[in-house]
Image (tube, rainbow, N blue to C red; front, side, top):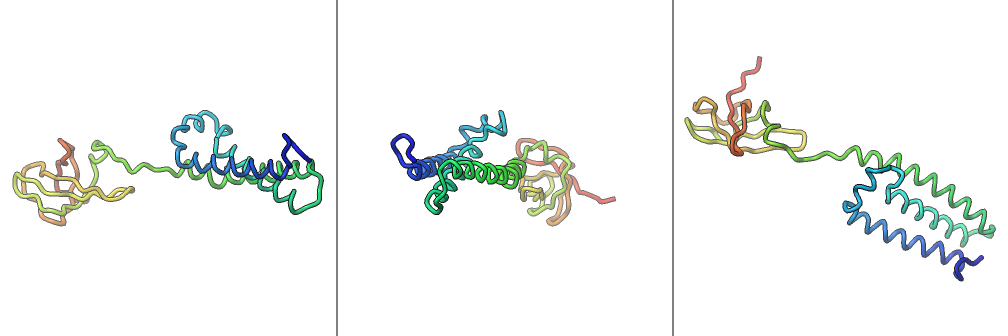
Amino acid sequence: MEVFNLSIETLYLYALVISGVLIILLFFFGDALGGIEEASPFLNPILILAFIVFLSASGYLLEVLTTMNSIPIALISIIIAFIFSVLLNVFILVPMSSAEESLVYSEDSLRGRVGVIIIPIPEKGYGEVLIESYSGRISKTAESLNGKAIADGEKVLVIEVKESRVIVTTHDQI
């Protein structure tokens, strides 16, 4: 069978290569199209291109490896592509989109956290505190709330943040 003066195998192969290249480009430059994915989950460009990849790959393989007619092969390829696209969406794309976590913190979010002094704070001076968080460890310049010295290794409570340094006091657990 021929379409556009090309054999159907060649057409499947062209579709496979072009959609594969587009997926790779979308992988690297996909942030520019981020608004399309948020508008509708069914217009996800990766999902559409993956459908074309699965369709053309299964169509090409069935055309080359079997002696079936081209129309049943096209129908079987559409079913295979639909199944694999649904599986890709449900088991890979949806979990990846919800698993995204930001490593960014704001200085206001440090207020009320407990940290450990790693460089002692002298009287009316500055030291350093290490604050543990889900995204890692945050090291900040620290100043004592009441101007008293705080020794190395003591637990402290962050009271406020001023000019990128934290004001701390000793933390007494109840």
